[in-house]
Amino acid sequence: MSLSDAELGPPPARASGGGRARAIDEGIVPLSRRGAIGLETSSFTGGDGEVSGLSVALFARMPFAPHTFLDVRLPFGLAMAERTDAVLGNVTLGAHHVARVGRTFWLTVGGDVGLATLSGKTHDHASYEPVSASRAYWDLHEYFPSILPIHARLGAEAHVGSLMIGRFQLEPVLYIPLGRNKEYEVAIQHAVELQIGHGIGGGVRVQGMALPTFDNVSIRHAVARNLYVLAIEPFLAIERNLAFLRTGLLLPFDEELGPPLDHTWGFHFTAGVRVD
Picture 1 (cartoon, one colour):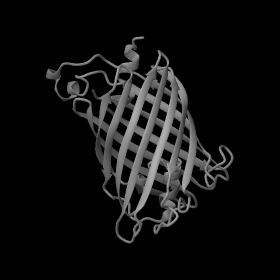
Picture 2 (cartoon, one colour):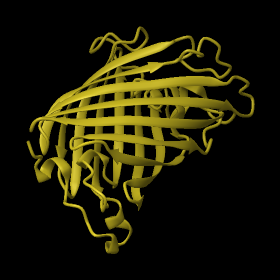
Picture 3 (cartoon, helix red, strand yellow):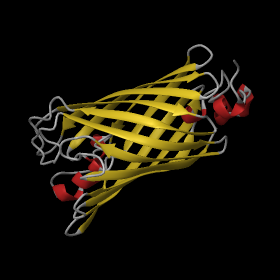
């Protein structure tokens, strides 16, 4: 069964079309994997309403070579409790490559390195803990102080029939300590998604954060000694050739953050425009 233009994006461009054309000139990249500039936000409120957090990330996936993209993320956030604190997260720079395997299956391999812009010496723990909790600690390294994060990414996307999309992510992160921080840490974030519909669709995402070394953390953080965080996110997605939008309700099952809708809940929103 052939796939529609809405599923795969525009047809391959000629190599003479410049950098943007080169990103798709050797095959068709699915819409979710194409180059983009956008905004991602996550917010959460505790069940008692006394603590809330907002994370905002500006991101870009810029075409560099056939199916290869340069990645930039600029995260910042607000933590609101007795006072409101603003924080700049660890800026990350990296790249990823999308490889087509067969007609309806793609693999993504890449990684990035953080610039260590968040310091445990100059920032109080109350200014970054609620921000990282807004995504159930996914991409925790963006709001973990005094580290140089090295982030590897492996992803897969499969289109089944004319309606169903499956996605998988496996992303280990090494936390290299800086300054007063003395402990190396490892996080392994992973997720699966099932989506029904292409141009307009909905589905569910199940994500986990394995934190095998966080029983011994020298930086004060609420996630210390919490070795696994699970969350489910039902979502709605709109994917078009020129723009995209996705919104979801994040429901953590973690002992600290959960149970869902009782202690903590969050909203996840992403939108942007295509650049290839």
